[in-house]
Length: 584
Ligand SMILES: CC(=O)SCCNC(=O)CCNC(=O)[C@H](O)C(C)(C)COP(=O)(O)OP(=O)(O)OC[C@H]1O[C@@H](n2cnc3c(N)ncnc32)[C@H](O)[C@@H]1OP(=O)(O)O
Ligand SMILES: CC(=O)C(=O)O
Figure 1 (cartoon, rainbow, N blue to C red):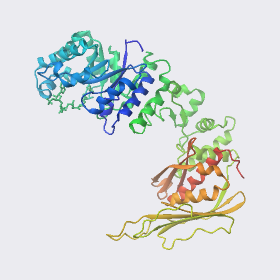
Figure 2 (cartoon, protein in one colour):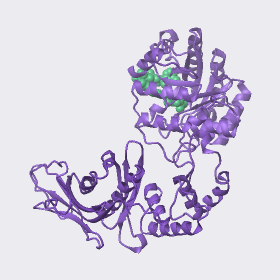
Figure 3 (tube, rainbow, N blue to C red):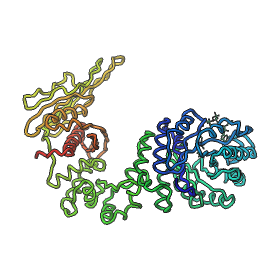
Figure 4 (cartoon, rainbow, N blue to C red):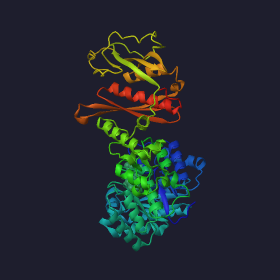
């Protein structure tokens, strides 16, 4: 356990779970608690036992299933109800019986809330606080008191707000937590109020800041500046409405900027992993631009930044990403200069430091391609293929002579895409059968300008009341693979799926590793008026092979043609990853 003089108190499982869109099972809660304990927080607020069966069950299972190394489990609940003895309040009993060594009690500290929400007297509220704290202390539990709406209450009636702090501290609360429940405070308000309360009560103070003004982290640090020694936070800032103070930003600030050790040794380096793991469990995509732990937190795009970073990364970074388990990344785009490309190439394993000519050519090509709608930021695989071309090491495993896709929709039928329908080697192979009633299609021959095509255009409206219909696509590809002409056809539930399957069918006989490739993501973006032309489509295709993923980009006026470009590159890069030698 860390020393008790400063508390990092996590409330992901209680306030974090109050975020819209988060619903945690007991197993999720146990898994998050283990991660947070490993990370090294001092307290884990597990929920409100007695308020719902799931939280009660969590505390029951935690007794046997949670072996916490760093953290102390904390149960959350309210002070006793007005006019009832603490011993007779079933929710207080649930806190007592939770098995948690620590209890956080939420108490009213804004006189308006006492009179209008709680509908009791100011004196009875003070008695509720004091009785409940004393009762739980008698039962051997450590007690923290969350003073709800403290800052608003202090503005309205400071003497009453202070009397609640005193009632809690005098009854035995270890920490009185000042809560910005409505999240409307700014850092200067927090510093002033925390300083005044500290001076006038002498109580040990904590801070709980909601993020409604976007200042929760700043408000938390402002409270620390004014003497608070207990910070309540949530992983990734999850919480009621817009959220809470982000645990990772607060902890990193304390460790790296305040030089205050609040985590066990090594904890900070686990921060990015823990953040992403919690996001996985709550099923919310990690916020890419989150400070410290976001995938973009140390991603540099501007050419001028890159040229300085080449000299010293600290020139454009506020801290070393490795300290929080993150990585610096170079983004290459039309904002890149030679330095950006040099650093990106280094990331990909190429040393271009002595090759200004290649760097210049790559920058020029990237800028020209980006002006046509390409984007290499997320397509490292396409970028590496381009780099290799400029280095005179082009990668090629096949040449496409032509491809064609048709899409058919027949009323009253629900066709199922079959496995590859025809595949063969040499020109005698059966060509993919034409579907009799094609309603749209795509065709591309090497060396020809692509025809304007589209898969689903022109289909007649389905008459009302007809049976359900579904479209089925069929693709034929003609390739030259290692000197042989291969023709293959396949069906798919859409034109890209059919093309992907036909391409695999043609190649798998020669490159067996392709059987392990999976198309894991496909993104379409329509770009208006790129370089004054009509709208073009940008496609990003991601493939995986069980060991990793790679992304390629294709652009064109025709969505299928753009998809083909991205697919062709994805297969090429995948084979390169497997170590197959390029054939030309
Ligand atoms: C600021 C915060 O985020 S605090 C955390 C809030 N979290 C939650 O509310 C989630 C869990 N809550 C629940 O499951 C339910 O609200 C329960 C089980 C706690 C209570 O449910 P119910 O008994 O049906 O009451 P309900 O939710 O309608 O109202 C809350 C009651 O608590 C009272 N109350 C509110 N704050 C306090 C307090 N600090 N101390 C004692 N009682 C309080 C209210 O006056 C109200 O009393 P009433 O029933 O006499 O009107
Ligand atoms: C206690 C709490 O969650 C709040 O006051 O916001």
